[in-house]
Length: 155
Length: 292
Ligand SMILES: Cc1cc2nc3c(=O)[nH]c(=O)nc-3n(C[C@H](O)[C@H](O)[C@H](O)COP(=O)(O)OP(=O)(O)OC[C@H]3O[C@@H](n4cnc5c(N)ncnc54)[C@H](O)[C@@H]3O)c2cc1C
Ligand code: FES
Ligand code: FES
Image (tube, rainbow over the protein chains, first blue to last red):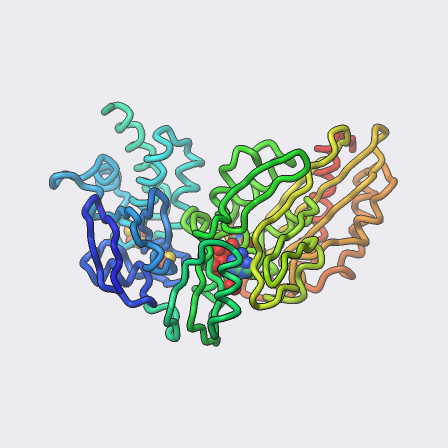
C-alpha cells in the first residue's frame, strides 16, 4: 500500500506493508537518524516528531502517518548548517557515542517549539523518555537550557 | 520489526458504531488506539488479522456541562495533562497522574480509553477515576454505562464483550457547598516508571471536620486497581488524627493481594501500600480543610 506524508518539509510517497512500524519505514527509506533500540517504547532512540508531537516510532504503526507532517533529526539543520540546539549539544559535551542523540534532539526540539522559555523541570520531563547510557543526563539538559537561552537572544 | 505478523487490514471507522460493526463482522479483529499497550505486550501469543483504529472516530475531547466532565475515549494522556479544565479540578489529581505517566512520547500516543481497556493493575489513571466516582460509557449492540468500581474482572479483563468499546468517561462534578479534598500518589523506581504502588483518595468533610464520604483506591497491589472499602468505612463519621488514620489502614493486607515482579516483592508492596494509603487519606483530609 501507499503512504503519503511530509518529512522535513518534503512530500513523500512510500510503498509500505500494513504491518510496518514507522521506524521500519523511515529507516528503510534512508532516515538512519531514527535509531533502532528497545522496540518496546522505553528508550526513545527511535523518537520522531509527528504533527508537532514526539512519538516512539518503534511502536507506532506507519499507517497512522497518512497525510502527517514529520520531523526527523535530518530535518533539524538548515542549508547545511546545524541548529543552535545541535551546536549546543556538541559544544557542551552532551554527546558521547551518539546513539541516543537524535531522539534527545527531537524531544528537545518539540519542547522548544511549544515552550521557548522552559524551566529546568520542563526540560527534564521532555527528555525523560530518552535513555542515554553514556553521558548521564546533566549535559543534555544543560545543553537544551543553553540553546533556549541563545535562541531567545537570536530573535 | 513488523509488529503483527498476522495483520491483514487496518480500518479507520468514522464513529463508534462503525467501529463496533467492524469488530462484529471482521474475523480476529481488535481495537487499536495509541497502540502503546497493544503493540508492546497486548498481542503476545494472539492472532490478529484486522485492526480497527478509533483515533479518528470523533472520540477525542474534554468537555464540561452543569453536572459532569466528559472525556472522550481517545483523548491522549498528554491532552489530559494539559487540559486547563483539570488544572483546577479535584486538586489537579488527574493532571498530576497524567504528568507522571512514563514519558512525553508515550503520553502523546496513549489514550485514556486504551488505558482502561488494557485493564492493567498498574494503570495510573484508574485509581484517580475511582476516587472521582467516574462512569464508563460503552458502545456495543446497545449503549451501556458502568461505574468504574466493578468494571474490572481480573488482570487484562473487563466486563466488556469483545465487540464493545469504551466511548466516554464521565466524572460527576461535586456539589458546590461541600468540602472535598483529593490526593494522588505514585511510588516507582523512578517517578516516571510504571508504578510499584499507586493510589488516589477523595475525602468529604462537614463543618466540624467529620468525614462524610471517603474513596480510597490502590493500584499494582491486586489483579486490578481496587477500592479499599473497609478502610473507607473505618473513616466515616470521624474527625481524623494520625492515629485514627494509621489504625484504619492497619489491616490493609486483608484488602490487597500483591504479587512479586521485577520491580518489587509482594512484601515490599504490602508495606508500601499501607504507607501510601495513610498518606493519601491525610493529604485529602487536609486539602478538604480538615485539621490534623
Ligand atoms: C514503556 C511503557 C511504559 C508505560 N508506563 C505506563 C505508566 O506509567 N502508567 C500507565 O498507566 N500505563 C503505562 N503504560 C501502558 C500503556 O501506555 C497505557 O495503558 C496506555 O494508556 C494504553 O493506551 P493506548 O491508547 O496506547 O492503548 P492501545 O495499546 O491502543 O490499547 C490497549 C488495549 O485496550 C484496547 N482498547 C483501546 N482503546 C479502547 C477503547 N476505547 N475501548 C475498548 N478497548 C480499547 C485495545 O484493544 C487493547 O487491548 C506503559 C507502556 C509502555 C510501552
Ligand atoms: S526503540 Fe523505540 S523506544 Fe526504544
Ligand atoms: S551518548 Fe551514548 S547513549 Fe547517549
